[in-house]
Image (cartoon, rainbow, N blue to C red):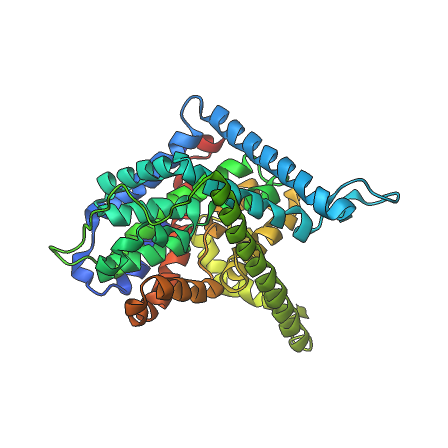
Length: 423
């Protein structure tokens, strides 16, 4: 049965689409068919993975796979770091929960998944899955072959690796197609970080691995739609064809593992550096704001973000009583990266947040749309297509806006579905 919260999410969905239409470069060219198709694809994928008979078995398999990867990564980390990574302790432990260390318990998982992703790409397993999703997006949303393939690759490879898949076609993409590639890159996450997020939420959200996987997949159509609304494709343009070949290649299985590990190491180093700097900056800002009081309490960055993004969180379908906490998480995602936001979401005790709000926030946070990713997007595309750097710079902030709203759109679509779907 539908409730007022479902209608609230539907209203939020309309507001999100209207906000992008307000920024459109051609408001008369609203893609009605694409809008219907994108929402239908999103809802269909969610229902297929949660509601159809046998889907729970698939979700259980995904959860088991994530647990297995976490266990295997822990073994490798314990071999290198010993008791610091949860190995045999040289002393008695009074508080086992204090043994969890982000650097030793989560970041090694990214290395393992990055290497495994490269290996599966070399063995053509991930390549065929990507081509399958690319064909789905091409048929249902009218994307060109190159754009469809890049959108599908974003789901598993990430915002920088996916353009490499179609590197030979980047120079020939239209402005609208290039913008679409940027938006979808910011609206989704890489497979390596996807598993890390599921691990963080494992103890506080049922089917956490399934929700994170679905979140990254269904945000891709949302990114496509919002990108097409803001910068519509001109008639007669677009549709660049992509051959079966790809610029992302490895010489052997060993080469894939080595290069995948090296790429994962760069991700780990970037995440570590960003977390240290941004968390320190927030702490510094809180010190500077320490003398200010409002409504009987200290003014902090967290409280300010909560106030600013409170109505935004409400639009996804969150109850107003929890919108402040949810809005704070959205603000953390935009300013401090989604990694910090997921860590904070995982810290909230089960009883302090409803399961619906936690689920919606999982979808709303699952994307690379944050201020730090703006620099990564510009740098990555400037290397791949240096002749279009000025064009990228002119669109990147619009891409951030659309990418951020794309994950909110996904949360709104999920929030509009009956609760029985996820039971």
